[in-house]
Amino acid sequence: QRQMCIRDRCGGAELGFLQAALYGIGVVAAVPTSPTGFATEKAVSAARGLRDLLVSMAAAVRSGGGGGGGNGEDPDDDVDNDDDDDDDDNEGDNAGGSLGDALDNGVAALGKFVVHHGLEWGRAGGARDVQALARAWTHLLPLRFDPEEAVPAHAALASALRDAELRNLLLQPPPPDGGGGGGGEGASSSSPIVRIGSICLEVVVMCSNDSPAARAYVQGLQTKMAEQAPSFPVALKAAMQLVKARQVVGSVPARGQFADAETINQFINLLNALR
Image (cartoon, rainbow, N blue to C red; front, side, top):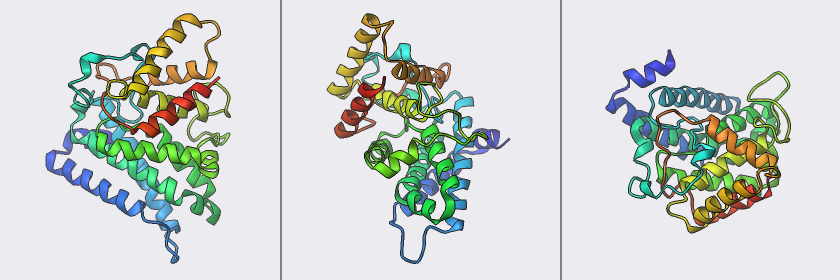
């Protein structure tokens, strides 16, 4: 019902307000933790509320056919360099209108909570909550509607993966009782490392029209798929399958500059390390 309300009852003015509000939450989330204790139970509760709203928004975008909201997809058989989309940039995936833009703002804000405050919240006794928020963030990535918002958001993921503690947080397996897929860091499509790999792959594909490095990787991946079918890396194949599974029927994959060069190179290095 919440999904239907968001999709069907929010007009342009309401969506504009929602987009601005979620952007504002991101501004607050980026503020370093203060000595007075920004890492409070109320702050964690607010982040959980944001997560729940974003899950509903993502489902509304998907059901509205407006592109791949909520970890939208580029299928592995679409892992190509579609030059026909050069002039479209993000236009095709923007059929969701400002709901997609608002979703991107919100996912970026959730990431800022995780990156800037997650470790402190965890040390303050909220480790389970923080792990759930981190899982939700990776389930909602990548951003695919607003390149201007996507570039720093994907850079934040890249930065988190370079930090030992944050990387460990993002790669934590879900608890045995559920909460975001099962398994450890094996090559199953539900493992955290495969999910992170699928995000990296999708971002690289989205950037493959504008980035020579991304284009070269995608072209090389196609060749590798053809030449190494039996020995193709299991984890990389699982990441490709996860991207495909997130595809929204009828959507047009986003294309544009959704990440900076440093982020693209780091994502490619991570993909090359998948086995």
